[in-house]
Length: 231
Image: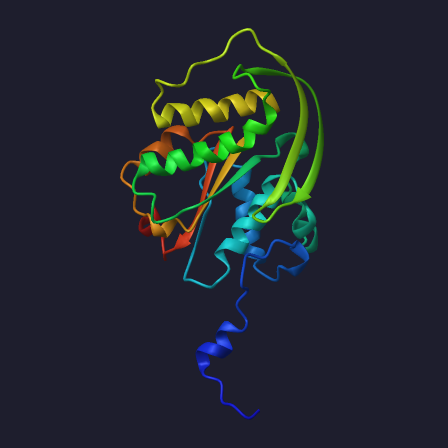
């Protein structure tokens, strides 16, 4: 080789340019995958993915999203198939990527609300009324950020709807996720990536303690060495 490569160039050559979405290209991390899969089964648990930049936190978060939505490819490859999420308990998963524009808890919750509303807008007709599930068929496909669990449903208009205009962002987020669970029959998971860009956020720990449940779960990925640095 005619040119001498510096250490930074050599190290960065082995870092993926983006998250690894294909389970067959995801190598190692069996213990971490096992722990994250186990956390999905525990009511009120808050999975955390910590580490320094470039160690694959986002790839882990993407694989956890796939597992949460019922994908078993990686679990099968790692001999962890018993940790799989049963189809009837699969999560509706929203991937929220933090930015410098998110300054506080209200901003983070609004980002989650935006993700939910972007998901549900295609499920509604031109009216703003609430819908009631009649039947459903399910298909899966790969999106740029996470294993997209698409559910095609046929709805009929419900007689009443809830006006959320006077709700706080806390109340609106909880209402939207509860409505999703009522309609889809599935719990909801928010995966918040690059959380270190906005952490710590005052009031977040209290919010998580109050609202993490069987039907609503939050997971965080970011730079940090322990939980106190991130939340």
